[in-house]
Length: 343
View 1: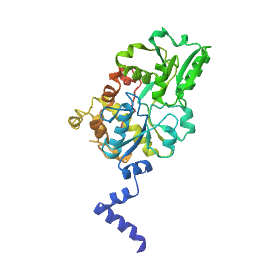
View 2: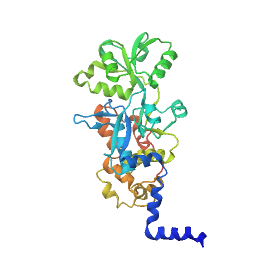
View 3: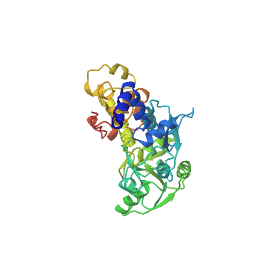
View 4: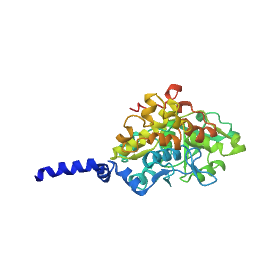
């Protein structure tokens, strides 16, 4: 008789619907997702000072492609893109913030490298911007190529992949330079504008954003044509929580897939009645993708409705700076953005 008790309890749980409650009480299978739900907000690490990626607008609202990735993750995990706490991080403390649990996701123009993924206890969930190291100079200097920077002083932030990229480039081309290392972003920009260094180097997208915000004076700055490194930028999470990694990765893939299928924030409700099986699976009408991730069946529809597809995010955050999509276009439009099948 005692051996039959578990079966009886199971029958009661199933009959009353309490099984779902009991399973939920055991957690989602992701410590990070459980903590985020208990807290009621996603803690997302951003730079907070780079136009197009993460920068508060005149109303104090964080804007940019990294900020929107954070919102998309919150929409998938919590059903509300507004449930995000943006945590400003620097190039020097960003990895510690993620490792320590101060943030749930790091989305701060961070380059995916082997060294970072193999030695820092983190893993990159995908790429939201294919970038590369570039150089910005004063137009008045008359410099047309990075190879004309022999002997130049170059402003660069310490603790970035840019440092190594510059050193490798100058060594490979038998050129010399003097690095001017400055941590604070505004300070390094001021140093460049004041003439303390001959060139300013970082990701070319950040240089384009900096030039863009100069307004009428943008013509006084020239972005050199060379891109000297591969800088795939994307969000990262702590290792050891595979379910959370899956959620973050597939949230980005869902936005790319939505663009590919023609689903956007304006037509997502209408698309719920589509007969296209890929659209129906994406929006949670058919299949169990949400269940596999431990979240709501309509999670992707929520992301698309509240944040948009990848093209909407790009047009809102990056296009105004005059940056063409180029290799950041979808794979079927000549770019590198490619989402695996969502099935």
